[in-house]
Length: 299
Image (cartoon, rainbow, N blue to C red):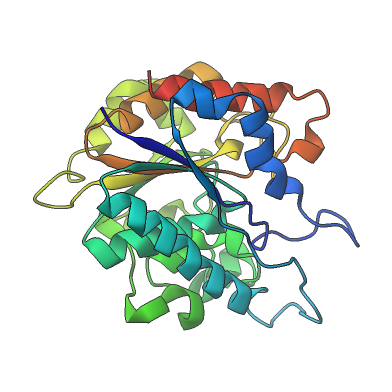
């Protein structure tokens, strides 16, 4: 039996403001899922919260690099400290975000310990970096760049914390749920990063795709892997409460099967949940669905 620890990382530092004068509401994700009884449903131990810095982009302008870079770097180290402590104790962190930049904390924590992989379930690759601006536009929002940063691409102040770049090797990353025709697919394939688009998952089946991807994420290649779950992998018909609700996503049954295979693997060491925004979910249905999917994955 694994000891699950529920830890809040309610950072919204990696997203652009949804409207002038507002801040992204993803910082409410953890509270909303806890309201669904997630702590008790998981049978998890209370892990508390890693409080993020204040959201304030100051006089940042396009072309200035990643906004909140210094705050993100400091928060990543602090979050990594907490996650590392749980991993070394043999505990399984369930980290509630926040935006996708919180994945950097897990990646850094694992890099301190050894060689680990990442199974990212995400509607997009979050692979924007200075080398692909022609495809993805200029860097700025780390929530769309965390995979690039984790694999050593991007600003050294985020991609090379503690001199540990890359936190993840390209060959140790598995991506699931990218939309068919994602503009990053060609670069990802060239880098040797494994991908399974929605169409491929639907054709082959979520379970078989997940089981096949686990090859190479076990000793002696890696010491295990982390799961990154972005709510925007789901189709906006069932998960509209995200900052980029792109059509053509997974349906809940597909995500449930995929997530269950990954999380129940004995080599899975933790998971983070990101991007759900309660401000965009007035009746709470999307949040209830997300909580059901996370809780169900451990059964």
